[in-house]
Amino acid sequence: MTSLRWIRAVRTVSAREANQSFSMLLAPAEAGEEVAITKRGHVVARLVPAGHHADAPDRAAVLAAFKAVLERKMDIGGPFTRDEIHER
Image (spheres, rainbow, N blue to C red):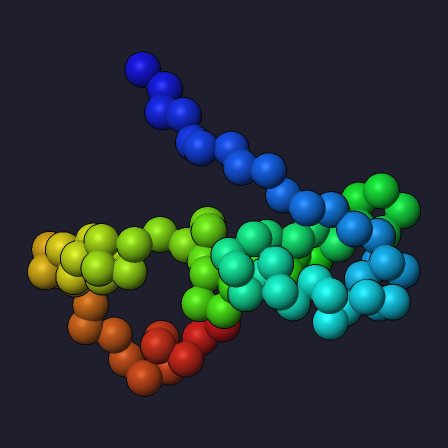
């Protein structure tokens, strides 16, 4: 079973338009709207509300997973000499 992500409408403006009317784009971003900025038809930047991380995983979940890995105490074949540690 696949999970579906909610797809929302995003305002798109060219880099030229964004440059000429940047202050007008701040109000929609403040209101929670994402603005995609394009150059030659390709998205090169996104203007999003401060603190917004659409693609960021849940911090608590990432830390819990990392802690679980550390607690496994995987054998990496030590102890190592100083030269072995600094070997490239």
